[in-house]
Each structure stands twice: as C-alpha cells, then as structure tokens.
Amino acid sequence: MHLPDGLVPVGMAAAGYAGSGALLALSMNRIARLPDPQAAMPRAAMMTAVFFAASAIVVPVPPTTVHLMLSGVMGVLLGWFAVPAILVGLFLQAVLFGHGGLTTIGLNGLIIAVPALMAFMVYRASAGRFPRLAAGVAGSGGVILSLAIFAAFVLLGLPAQMDASAERAALVVFVLAHMPLVVAEGVIVIVLLQILSRVEPGLLPRG
Amino acid sequence: MAEAAPRLPDCPRTRLLVALILAFAFASVRQITSLPLLAAFALAALVASGQPLAVLARLRAPAMLALAIALALALFSGSDTLWQAGPLHLRSDGVAAGALVALRLLAIVTLTLVLLGSLPPHKLAEALRSLGLPAILFDLVMLTLRYIDEMRARLARAEAARRLRGGGAGWRALPERAAVFATALIHGQHRADRVWAAMRLRHYGAARPATPPFGLHDLFWIGAALALAAALVWLDRAT
Image 1 (cartoon, chains in turn green, red):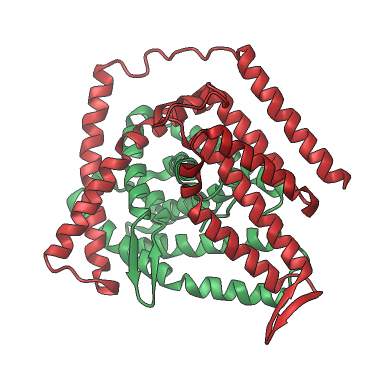
Image 2 (cartoon, helix red, strand yellow; image 1 turned 90 degrees about the horizontal axis):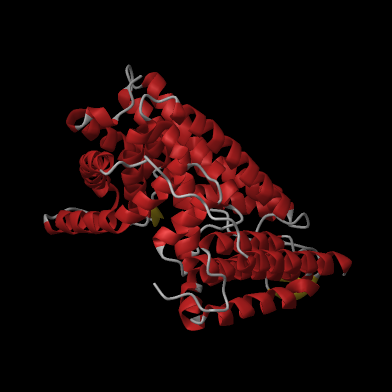
C-alpha cells in the first residue's frame, strides 16, 4: 500500500516529508527517554529485518494473494521504535528495489507508521483484559487505518479532472480487494502474539 | 556491487542529495511538453550508470505500475473522448495526465536506482549518517542491512519445512504462518541480545567518525543538480 513517485503533487510529497519528520522527531524523543535506548536498537533492527523479509512473502488467501504489511504487529512489538524502523524499511525498499518511492517516503511513512503507533497504544491499553481482541484490533485495525490514510492521500492527489464516480468506484474496488488482507493480518497477529505471550513474553509491551 | 561509473558522484552523501534534489524537481513537472526533458534526463542517468541493461531489468515492476496508472487515468480522467470501443472511452486529458504520472514515476525510479541502488549497503547508511540524521537511524540501517538476507533465508527455510511437513495453503495455513513468523522473531530477539553484547564489548558508540566537509567535486555535483532542477522547473512553468 505504497504511493509511488510522481503520482501526487510535489507539494503533497514535501508535506509528507515534513509530517514523517515530525513523527520521527517525536518518536526519537520518546526513545531517548527509555532507560537504555541503545540496547533496544539491535532488537529493533532485527525485527525490521524480519518484517522486511516477511512483507516480501506472498500469502495465498483465496480469491487473491496478499503481501502482509505487519504494521500492527510492528507497532505492538517495537512501540515508538516502529517509526524509525518503518522509515528505514521504506528507504531501503525505494533504493534497493525501486518499490514505493523516494519522494513519497514521507507520505508512505505516515500511511504505515501512524497505524503502527495506534496498534501499540491500543494493545498496551487493552491487552491485559482482552488480549485476543487487542491483537485483532492491532492487526486488522492497522490495515484498515492504512487503507483510509492511503485513500485520503490518493483522493487529494489525483488529477482534479478525474471522473468523480469513477474515482469512488475505483476506491470501493481497492478497499474490497484489501478485505482478505484485513482478515489475514488480524488472524496472523492474534496467533503470533498468543505464541509470543506463551514462549517469549519479554517481547510484548508491558502495559 | 558494481564500481561507480566515473560520470556519477563518488561521495554517497552527494549522491543522496543529488537524487533528492532531482527527484523532487522531476515530481514537480506539470506540463506534458516537459516530458521529453524528463525522458532525456532519465536516459542520461541510464548512460551515466555504465550498466543500463541492469538498471532497465530492475525497472520492470515500476514500468508495469506506471502502465497501470496511465491506463486508469486515460480511461477515467477527463471529458473529451479521443477514441471509444464500446463502454471504454479513451480521454485526451486522461492520456495526458497518465503520461505525465507514468513518466515522472519512471524518471524518478531510474534516477534512484542509478544513483543509490548501485551503492554498497554500508555506503547507503553512511550517506544517511553524514546528512546529520540521528546516529540511531544509521545503526538501524546498518544492522537491518546486515540481517535482511539472513532473515529472508530463515523464513524461506521455515516455509519449506512447513510445506514438507504437510502444511496447508490458503486461509487454513494462516496460523501456521504466524507460528513461522513468531519463531523468526524469537530467534531474532536472541540473536539481537548476543549482537548487543558483542557491540558493547567492542565499545560501540564510544566515538563516531566526524563528517568531512563537502569537497569541490561534491559542490560541483550539488550545484549542477540544483541548476538542472531550477532549469527544469522554470522551463516547465514557462510553457
């Protein structure tokens, strides 16, 4: 769910850089308050590598196949570190594979990092009482929020002369096409966090 | 990784700055009459890379995306019909908008792959660090690059093992796939603990090399990029 280069006006792309820059500054400020921020960094890098590799895997979920985003679980497991991890991942995707975009790193960062932070906050607030629900909201909700932000950016950025009904129809098709991803990520995050809570609870955020 | 062709900047920091300046200039093009200029820039970058065929091979996926966007805009954007076949209307405004978006996309991706995609991974990280980004980002990039291939291989082996054990496909396989990711994350966590201990033993973070100032060579490339960007935007706005 990446915006490619050249699709949106350059002013919007620049505003995306400003928005992601502000979010990065906020996250670095929160990371600096950790007891030992440097100690958390190798774990963040390792998880970024896992997510980078996992998001390249095509998962068949009939009638379609999906590339997992895993933004929700990144948020849950990395917390504020998810923001620099996601921006690093987007930069490497753009430079190494020409995927996503160099001018749209800022906008794509907002599309993925804002839902990741939402997932972190929701999970931390409710996992103690409703762990499966919290995990499902983190996984599925992360994708839904990303879809909403992506659609908003596309609607703002597409040429004004585009036929309004065609635009609406295209967005409806786009959202429906991602419903399997919404469900798949919800299921995967619920099971994944259940396994981690049994085997490696230290990986999960403490409330 | 291939050696940089002599027609490109040597310094990774300069390459990153030139890439950003020109990418944003390309993204700001609004007139279809500027498209030949964009195409010329992209072609020049391809030639300067010294490996045009390798770069073109990596453009396959972006080219498919550009074509899809161009077609969508040509069919659904604008009002004047150029050509019609049944319910499908090819509209002149849409064709122009589609060509603009497609060529902007391809020009920027070409530039990105030529200037940055050919750099060794540690040079990429060095480019970010030397632009004044927080050291933690540099460290994150370095370690992520170090472990990406290892994690990919681990996930591929785990997936193969899952299938060999009779693992299913489709929706029913999602819990098994979640277990594969969980295993990779747990192994990653344990590996990260050992990496952190080794880094501390090697005095990680004690001293960082100072960023050298820009040389004449770098200033030339950055100045040239700014001049090209300004010329492109001026010509685009003037038509």
